[in-house]
Length: 229
Image (tube, rainbow, N blue to C red; front, top):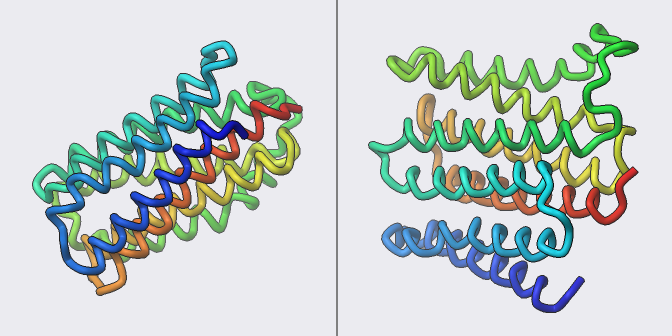
């Protein structure tokens, strides 16, 4: 890994730690600077590692997901812009779905797929999403339909990541899949803390799982680009 590339990862680690420190200390005004830098550093890193290769649909999809995530991070700094932040992350997940589909062997293959087995493999994800929706549903109000749409897209993102099993190298699969699961967990904590019951540790858990998720997904795509199968 080139030194100039790893500097972006050091920046990512630094600003993530700073953002979580500001969060713990209640210095929310400083987070207007630290939080956007988390994704900006990952965007810088991903741009550097993909620049030597052709600018493919896979690269564009991941970059789109990172940019929409950055926009969502900024919008979520204001409570009254939550719905727009949700929309930005909806688009980010849609981009990740495209990327995960591309970053596997025979992405468009339908024949030979055992949909019953596929359904049971994805069952824990479906049950977790349904349980969170059950908890938050009474308090959603006008947010019900946007939240349902968002749940569908994030569940699709996680199941698409799981679909890559044995369709890419194992390093890429596990990094992307664990990253997708952590993204799912982070969003679940957001939903519970906002629409069901907040708790003191929610902010740290949300940012910790979210930052780790984005890093793992980027590193998983990097593993695929370096050693595709």
